[in-house]
Length: 315
Ligand SMILES: Nc1ncnc2c1ncn2[C@@H]1O[C@H](COP(=O)(O)OP(=O)(O)OP(=O)(O)O)[C@@H](O)[C@H]1O
Ligand SMILES: [Mg+2]
Image (cartoon, rainbow, N blue to C red):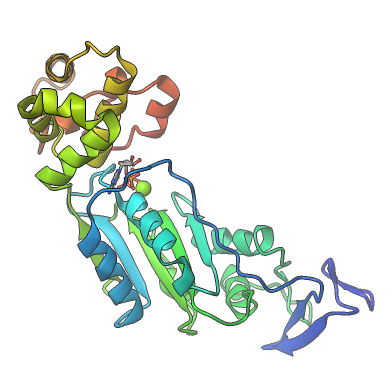
């Protein structure tokens, strides 16, 4: 360490503080503006979920500082991430300390938090204390909370698609300015975390989503079939979205009836494959769960969506 540098941080003109045996240095040239990092998901017409949105806000501000959106059935594509995005966007002004969005899928939560602070906030997280002892990841995360920029104001931390909550308690700061919103497919969530179980869309919302994608005129032409299609898709937002996009790409004479027929045929093929492979057909909660993505998704997208449901087969 030189007089002007410590772990790559210019400390000469900085505001230097030693706290808990950890050297903290705030670069003076860095304006403490909040980092707002919310992914763009491309959904132009969000439908429903008004009760859940209110509930998230209420829970994050009353009883608890950690809320988890989970799926009633543990199924993917139900809209957990979309709901978290909607909440973060709508309430960005309620979190003057910033919105920190972290992709937690199959990742070490501590490492993800440290990386965000380094990359998005431009702070160098110390790996040693002032006496040269290595800091654990948990201590480094604690440093991140203590040195969060700006230093005041509520912060929303979204951990999207948490697949492992082991050690999560140790990462949560005692400082109440940080509010955590998790999305997860996990069924057994820690008792300290307030859960918001998310179900599929209502019949009306499902139809509205289809209308948003393919247009009212097309839906009204075959209203009963449109309703049947949404029902067939189990009112799963992802299913309706994929089918809607598929229809939209087809020429105008492609009917909703034809779409339903294709899906039913595809499902029959899938069942035949399943029964050949397993010797029996798998019972399912809704038809779409057994459906193969091959019809609707291009290869690349499909591979990122193979985990819709544990019993889901991709061919
Ligand atoms: N409320 C909604 N309004 C409009 N579209 C929605 C809504 N919820 C979800 N969708 C659509 O469904 C798709 C899947 O939703 P999302 O990615 O949020 O599911 P998820 O529950 O997070 O799934 P996974 O468990 O795989 O992460 C989204 O890309 C979006 O297009
Ligand atoms: Mg998700």
